[in-house]
Length: 468
Image 1: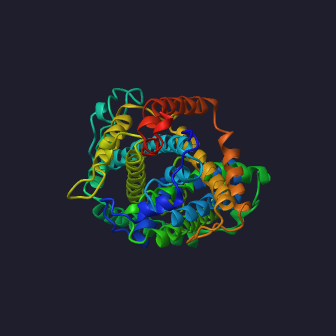
Image 2 (image 1 turned 45 degrees about the horizontal axis):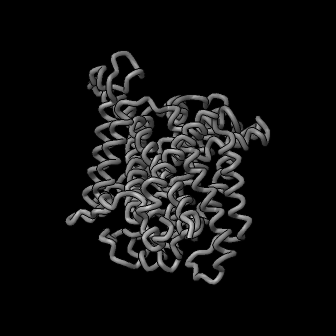
Image 3 (image 1 turned 90 degrees about the vertical axis):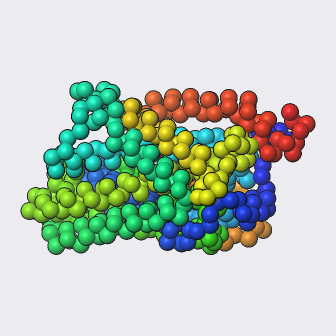
C-alpha cells in the first residue's frame, strides 16, 4: 500500500477513542462549550463590529455576521459529525487520517500546529498591550526594553508580559485539564457576563435613525464585511481536540461545537445592533469603537468594563488554542509521525506535558521577540485549509461509508459542506501573495520531515513493511 493511500479505519479510531489513553476524562458539555467559546470570542467583538460597519457594511454589518456565521456553521456542522463519529484527540488531523489518508493528515496536522502556535503568540502580544495600558493608568510603567519586541518602538528589546502570559498558560495546562478548564470556565463566564451587560446598557442609547441608510455600501460591502468578520467566528474546532478528555465525547462534542458557535454569533449580532444604533456607522472606524461610542454618550466607566472583558477574553483564547496545539502534537506523535517521546503523559496531572511546555516556550519566544503582524495572516490560511478538507471529507465519507452510525448528521449533504468549501476558497484566494509564499514554504518543510521521518516511523508504516 502506498503511503499516500494508507489510512486509519473508522472502526480502529473508534476503538482508540474508547481506550484509556492516560488523559483525564473530566470535561462535560459546559466545559467543552466553554473551550469553544474561549476560542471564538476574543477582544475582536469590541473591535471588528465597528471597523466592519465603518469600512464595509454600514448598519448592515449584522448581515455580514449572519452570512459569515452561516458559512462558518457549514464547516462547524461537518466538524460536529466527525466529532460524534470519531471521538479521538486531534480534530481535523485525525478526521483527515480516516478519510483522506496519511499524507493529507500529516499536512493538515503540520498546518494546524503552526496555526495554533501563531494564534497564541499573536494573542499574547494583544494581551500584553492591554495589560501595559492598565498598568500605566495605575502609575506602573515598564522599562522601555520590556515593552515590546525589537523594532516595535524606541528602546524595545522584548515583550516581557507576552512571554510571561504564554508561559503561565502553558504552566496551567501542564497541571492538567481539570484545573485548566476551571480557569477557562471562569474567564468565559466573566467575558460573557460583561458582553451581555454592555449590550443591555447600550440598548437604552440606540437611535434607530442611525440604521439608515441600512446598506450604504451595497451588497458587495456586506460580502466584504462578511469576509472580514469571518475570522471572528471560528475557533470552535479547538474543543474537538479535547475528545479524549471528554466524559461522553460522542454525545457532547457535536452539541458543544454547534452551541458555542450559536452563542458567539448571537453575541456578535447583538453587539452589532447596539453600536450601529448608538452612533452613525461612519464614526466607528476607531481602534476601540465600542469604548468610543459609550464614552461619547457619557458612559466612560464602560471602558473599564470592556478592558476587564478583554483581559478575561484573551486569556480564554490563549487557553483554548494552546490546548488544541498540544493535543494535536500529542495525537501526531502517538501515530508515529512525530517522535513517541512527546506522547508521555504526566503521571500525576494526566497531561501531555512535553508538547504543552514546548509550545509554551516557542510562543513565549515568538511573542517576546518577533513583530508578527504579517505572519499572523498564516493563521487564516491554515484555518481555511482545514475547513476545506473537513467539509470535503464529509462528502467522501457519506459516499464511501453510508452505513456508519453517526451520532450527529450534517444536514443537506453535499450542499452544506459545499457552502463551507466555497466560502473558504473565496477567502483563501483573497489572501496576500506573501501569505501564500510563507504557507507553501511551511508545507514544503512539513513534507520533507514526513518523507525522511514520518513515512518510515508511522504506526501504519509498520503494518506495511514492504513499503519501506
